[in-house]
Image (cartoon, rainbow, N blue to C red; front, side, top):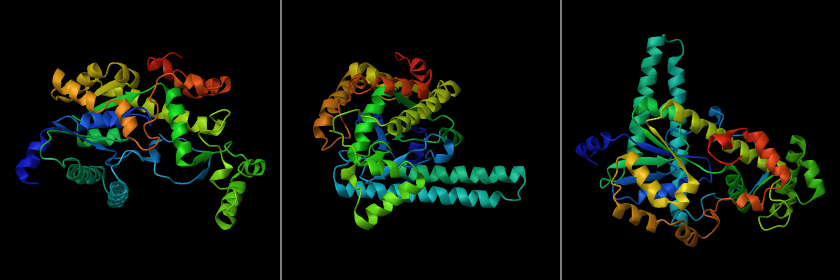
Length: 351
């Protein structure tokens, strides 16, 4: 990549696609990436949200087969392995940069610490652009990922963010089916009463894990499956998924207030029912061609039904609105309300 090309790229500050898991972010990423002038990456770990940001709820997870959450997204297994190796590299590199920055700031004056922070931002910007600006035929570049927006705006003051949200109850259903098919289980998913009792405490969970690794007891066959009869959620699973949704949505709404001219809020349901209008609105926000011909081509190439038929597993599931009514018990409804408070109303959904 020559200097002239990089200079042209830098004139356009990047954008981010942001939203809770299973809210349509991957679909939106594919829509935007198919635009002739837009490159939208799939979850590059650039300026990532970390556990210190408080956007991840504590989980009462009791068993995890560690299956890939992205089956059906990548072309083949080799591409997926390359993606995960790059993610590990990027995350480790940024941790090293932050650690070095903090070490250098020890004992320094406020002015010196400010200079060191600036050096960090410049380093991250160079790292960001090396991976982000990878296609000389594109003009607008973005990344679909949980992103530290505070850090993003320090590096790129004019960056734009497309936020997409979805009815939290449908998110919970979609995420629950997804995690079950990944082999990730929470307390209450146990089919064995002894295993349930063991997993009720940290000591018991350590014992059950040791029994699994040493003797092969209490493996995946001991837990609820997506196709099993009965309630979809255990209390622990709904608490985790609903809390994660609420934390991310609050983060989004906070930034919508702080940077209203640089944030665009999209509702997944509208993107499903009036895709052409919503895609045209997003493209206008990003400064890209949103002619009827371009929009129609993008929508036709990335219809949700096509993504589902192309997928070999559950990453793109039903995608329907209101599916929660088929799975939420009255107890689930009350628990969800206790966790999310007034968020549904604030997002424009029926409480």
